[in-house]
Image 1 (cartoon, rainbow, N blue to C red):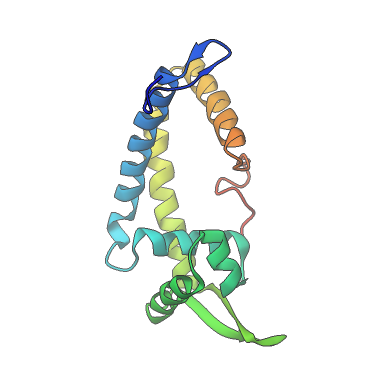
Image 2: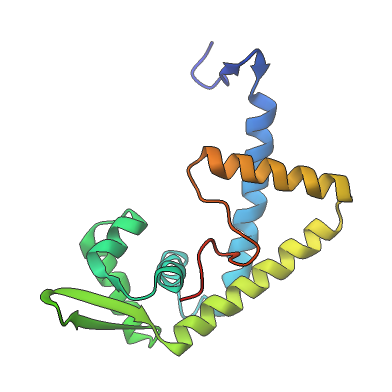
Length: 166
């Protein structure tokens, strides 16, 4: 089997599955980019990702944020500085450990997260509405299995971002 050939699991050729997931991910990446279009003068995609993590985790140490985003602490610091300059996050010294920096969303930062996620939700809703009820049930099952296999917690209906509101 060549380097690019898909593995076989339980006799199933995974090429069709991998192709379907890649195609679906292309759709979702495009949707994510479009949902950021209205705020792209304020935040980049990586910066938005930081805002979303803050929305879910609440006040967070800078070093923890770097770990959550899988970036260097210096990269997280630069992103936080830019977001603070834009008025989207507040960075403060941790009163319990003056060597640490804590950050949290501002009201404007929360508004941007909510606005972008509402746009995404609306566009996904329009796509899903064009599917049959059976296709929607199959999609729920497949996406839950896919995210679970990838180690991502399955989002509840009450917490569509995957975590409670902070």
